[in-house]
Amino acid sequence: MTYKQTSDYFENLCKFKLVGHSDDQKKFMRINIDDIIDNSAKFKLGFPAVLLELPENKLSGETDDSAFKNRYVALTFLSKVPPQDKTRELEVYDEMETLGLKFMAKVNHDYKNFADRKIHSFSFNDVRWFKIGPVADNLYGQRFEFPIGFVAKEFRIYNANDWT
Image (cartoon, rainbow, N blue to C red; front, side):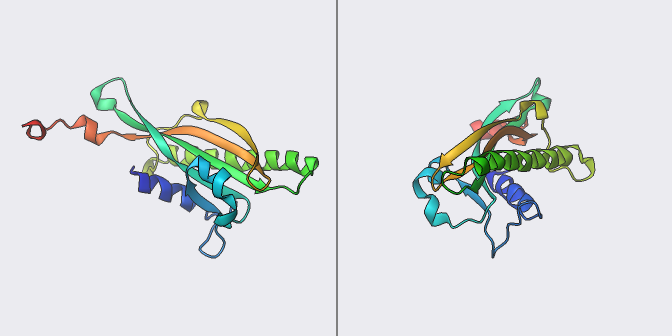
């Protein structure tokens, strides 16, 4: 899966009713984490918002035949909280955790769907998340980190002509 395919996959998940992302109601964005803090006001996202950081990568596997590219994805789920509303702050942490776990359930489902497999490696044991907030304009939520894997075709095929 390329970076674009990874981004497209998570953007399409945001189009379901849980988030409601559309061309008219933007609720998904691919970002660098510094963008949240430095430029949040210009994004004009609806809430809940889902932010995807392009993944870091690691090659893994026990043998050449089982080599995988693991992409370490970070999804941040955010919502706006009125200033000084400590009760709403705690509610948003719970709501964004629930939304993140629903995303993890969908990724797990897509991993187990052998008929139309979009994810080739996923373990819910590797999912971790952290509370976020307040950031930017009083945004709170959860940041989920997890690896998703894909067959490392480029690694498996050695071509001597590449090295002449």
